[in-house]
Figure 1 (tube, helix red, strand yellow):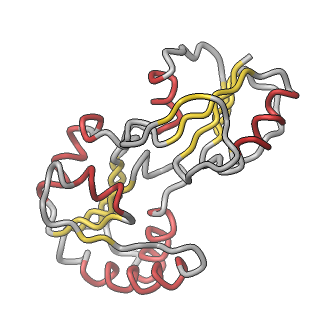
Figure 2 (cartoon, one colour):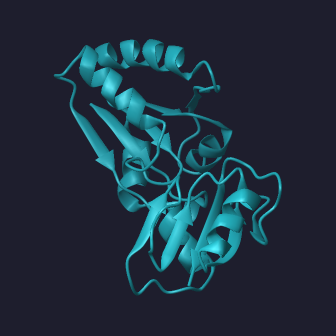
Length: 196
């Protein structure tokens, strides 16, 4: 069986009990980078890191999915990602490629604490109406969370022009966490949160 396991926003204590159980019991754990590896190592020592470099990710997905389509018939393998596996995750492409190669592979998605909900706890803000999770800006919602906000200043200006108060949250629950005004350069693990 293939497991897509959500690790939450980066703090090992926010990993769900189900995710912890799967991590501890499967034959192998694969992660797409060092940050996910750091979380998993709290529950298991042997972790396989498979990097997905920009521009070469398609080839990595092809090779890995070929392997998993065969191995997951007899073995239990977990692919663990930060955030929730069902939202903007590296696992999505792996899942589709494995199912295309071998539709008979059983897959379980293990949900977790997604960054776009955890950020409101971090900011001590309560969401009491609908909001959008987006990589684009084009609506009238009261709350907006922009994931992977690497162009923070530009996005923040757009949000402010729409009447939102904006804060940037970078590397939430991780080493180097930063909460404050949007910056010109931001990491991949950056959220912009707007409310009005």
